[in-house]
Length: 139
Image 1 (cartoon, helix red, strand yellow):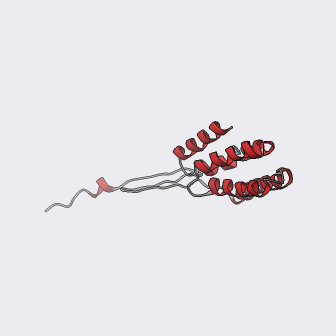
Image 2: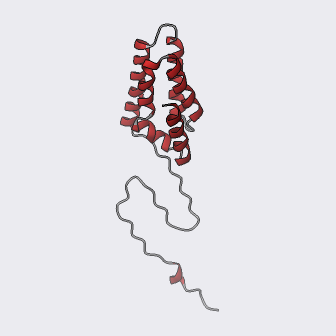
Image 3: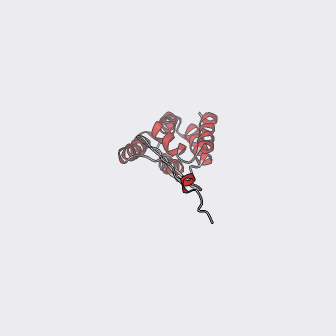
């Protein structure tokens, strides 16, 4: 009885510098990657929404101020959720255009901010495209 050639199962693998990516070696590996924000980016994103809340508090007509503040919370929840909600983004943009048009530009600027884009892209290309479509339809 002869032994199997063990050299057929040996590999010499060299991996250079790997930055912001993953490497798997071997058979039957699966890699999942979630694109996320750094702590500094998270703080910037929170500041972005805080600035929007401040603008809404200062500039929304008194008759719709409470509703406008609620819409900003809905927008933030819809964009930073694990699964962003393009329907809510569309609905909020439409509401601001109809009820507080002087703030619609500020809301759109938050939605198209690169940090928000990074969060949305983390949910996948299809989701990012749906959010972009919602913005295009309501802007």
